[in-house]
Amino acid sequence: MAEQRLNGWQVASRLLSFIGVFGLILLCLVTVVDILMRGVLGSPFRATTDLYEVLVPVIVAAFLPIAFAERRHVTIRFLGAAFRRAGKPRVAWALDLIGEIVALGLVVLIAWQLVL
Image 1 (cartoon, helix red, strand yellow):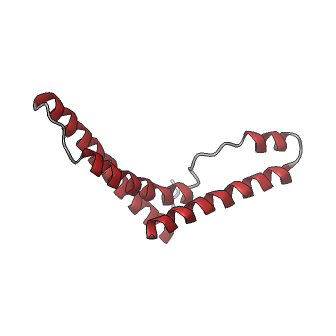
Image 2: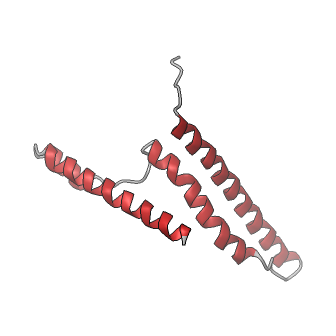
Image 3: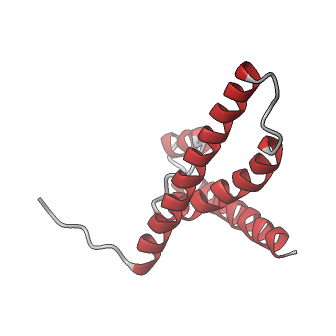
């Protein structure tokens, strides 16, 4: 079995993804506590909405680096596949490039909004 060596970015993105997993588990526990409190005590867990507002952006931000590093983000390539089948790989490549640039722009926008 071949051993895969990880570079620094891959290690950092995997560590961040563990933070995201911990956040998802915490979000599930908050949901369960809220449901139990509503059912047993007739009163909701008051901080549920606040915790969701804090945890969801952290979870999403924690999973973005590993998605980009391992190229496992969601893509829709039906138009590019059609151009490849039609014998126009350069057009498909250009569409992929445009998609990558748009994704980079969105990441920069998210980072900019987090700084403000």
